Image 1 (cartoon, rainbow, N blue to C red):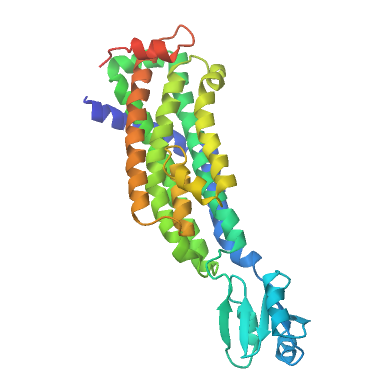
Image 2 (cartoon, one colour):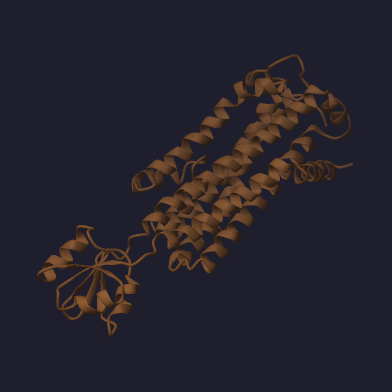
Length: 353
């Protein structure tokens, strides 16, 4: 049996086991619900009749349409009310409709003829979408990499604890065991992400997402390859962490660095998503690029060449972490005499083939 055949056999077994796992199925359903909510809720939450500032001469048709009208003395006061965010829109002489960041369709429809609409801040995003999209990108990558990473580590520990790994290592190359687990975890995680992306697109189409789909489409398209490469990087670290211990109880101690390098970028993207300089830096760092770069594409802050460069840098980093993780994995897998240091595993890698 070749290494490729052995890795394929290990991967197939791991996938079959996970597809029968209720926890895996529940987490998949949870992600799909989050994706649907993130794309359907923004247009729903932004609904309701608009509040309009207008002079008494222009207020009649607006009140007849069921809009909440605030009477002002002149056009200048009406515009100021919009700028101060006291009303959603204003009707001024022309006639013209003033709004801050999106067209008030119900105000336009209330007028007998369609007036000129001038957005005072046309590039602004829907506030609900501006909050939900960064959170969803970061949350999905963080939770998925953590859940599947822990499962890879626990699988390694279970095989060491039961000494099954000695039988497996005698039948197939050690690197085939690692490759099979990595492939299975990546396929399952990527399958979840593809389903989430499809649900998100469907939610925008059927949920009347308006202009959200053209903005979010490229971000989702880039998120998939960034997620794939980023997950391989994190999964290699989890596999190495699992090989360093012999009991499930000891996993927390060795996995703390892995959890931190995933957790800190998660919070950085959440809290710094409105800081252009910070997001530019985060979009090139290996552990934050899978969420920061797609988010910059969503907001229109990244030129077309930046995601290509960031993905290439992430590929290089993932390759380096994969080689390092494989070396630690091979050096620690057959050692069952307690917790092993990274230095020991690195220097005394088992030559099992």
